[in-house]
Length: 146
Length: 146
DNA sequence: TTATAAAAGGACATACATGTCCTTTTATAA
DNA sequence: TTATAAAAGGACATGTATGTCCTTTTATAA
Image (cartoon, rainbow over all chains, first blue to last red; front, side, top):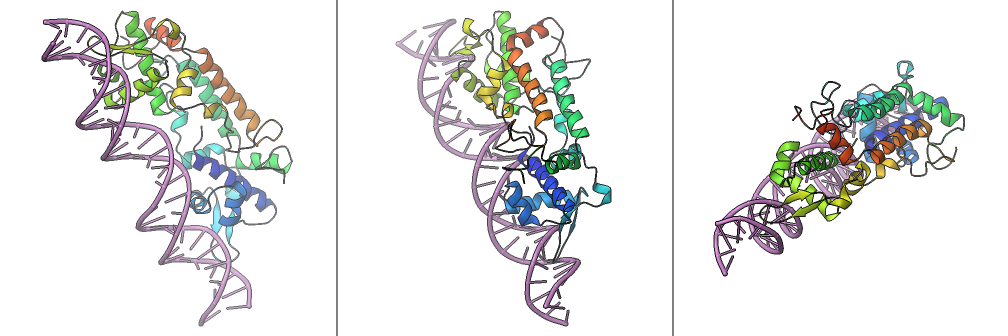
């Protein structure tokens, strides 16, 4: 299960992408409200994202958050990696340090399938692919389709 | 990803089962050492397990932890449910409160497959089925096969 | 019956994730 | 050039998971 911070981050990035497609650069307040997250905490997360170059920002009047051309294929893995680390893709489901194919814990084979399945999803899906679904009305970001 | 407490709990239960099959009732000290967990914290977790009837215990000299006949088919789900709750089997991967088949988040379909796959595993595998693999030498509980 | 060994339980300690508040920096509009 | 709006950043607050220590209860062996 992803951390709350990672969830906020992904939802925030998707919202920024949707607004960017409308030629807008949303600010912290607008983003926090839309993704239903605390404003000050959202600000911290957005800082992490820009510091790690997953997104750009502009200070000052008319500023806000946006993607530049190098940031238009941002996988969920990239976001998870930056916000909470990628332990969940390596860790043994049983909690053993030395668990591997040669020295498997009793859950190894089954767990690996699930874990790798999740890895595949987050390596395939991007902020843009998710945003596209919302734009097309196939999915929602919050309560109602916009 | 399961919590550390849940990992300890599952490893502890498996070890108790293995020892029970050898007609032994391990105590906190022996269990904690084997599963490489802090002793006092392990004691707390074992308390939770016995209080919730996942396992039995005897106080006093010669006491320790063991399974009775009603506890010989303990699914991993039962353990997870008691130790950390089952939010991970219900929660939206995106963090949306209102995400469901009719109102899906953009990750809904793919995430559901992974989440349900994990649910299937923990509903199928039991402390006893995992212990059996270790007993048969097909898997390990810690560093080396015993 | 008493000493001992073991689980149970309460109170406290620590670490990390989450959340808040206030100040500083910076870009733009007037 | 100055006032303003916005992100960046530092310091602090709260909550929850994890971990420790000490006392109480209870079963057994001597």
